[in-house]
Length: 129
Image (tube, rainbow, N blue to C red):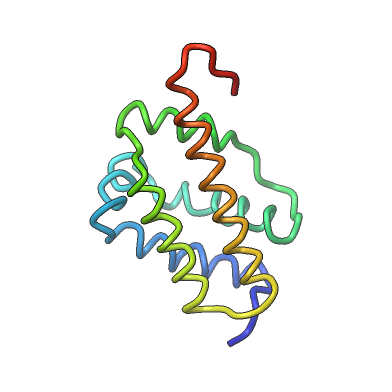
C-alpha cells in the first residue's frame, strides 16, 4: 500500500471515511441529521485534511464551535468519539501505509481529544473557547 501523498489521496480518504460514517449506527444518525448537503461538507473536509497533512492553505472554519453547536442538538458522548476515531483509523489503514498515514491517525486522535475536551468544558459557565 502507498502512503498519503497527494490531494487525490486526501479526497479518497475523506470520501471513504464519510461513507463509513454515514452508515455507522453510533455516529451516522448525528452526521446524517446535521449535514444537509454532503456536496458542500466534503470539500470543506478535503481542505481541512489537506491543511492538516500537507500545510496547504484553504481551510477556514472553527471546528470547536461547530462541535459545541452539534453537542447542543445531539449531546456528544464518549462512544461517539470512540466510534469516530475507530472509523478514521480503520479507513486510513484500509487505504494507506506510511509516514503520512500514521500522521493522519495521530492527528485524528489529537483532534478528537481536543474536541472532546472543549465540548465537555463548554458545559461549564466559565468556559473559554
